[in-house]
Length: 88
Image 1 (cartoon, helix red, strand yellow):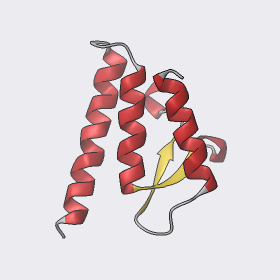
Image 2 (cartoon, rainbow, N blue to C red):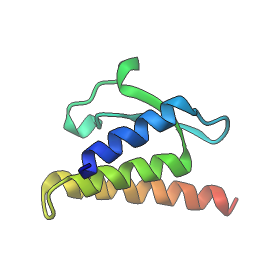
Image 3 (cartoon, rainbow, N blue to C red):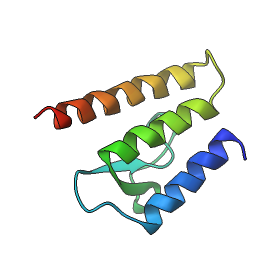
Image 4 (tube, rainbow, N blue to C red):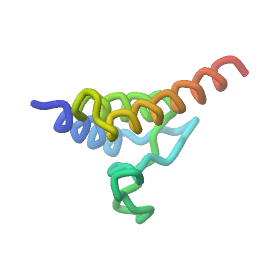
């Protein structure tokens, strides 16, 4: 199973077991890659799951690519939001 397949598997696990608190909305296909805001492209995730999703997307992209840099930036934002929540 490659990294993107692991990401999609993770999304399906999250869909089967939706979070009940600390919910954020995640774009399955990121907006920066043309993902839309339609319900089929959105999934509720916990903050931790959101960080994990962005991490898995990062792993699926070529090292040094502009796309990977965008996802690393998004991952860092997720981690920052999670840390703020944990320390509040």
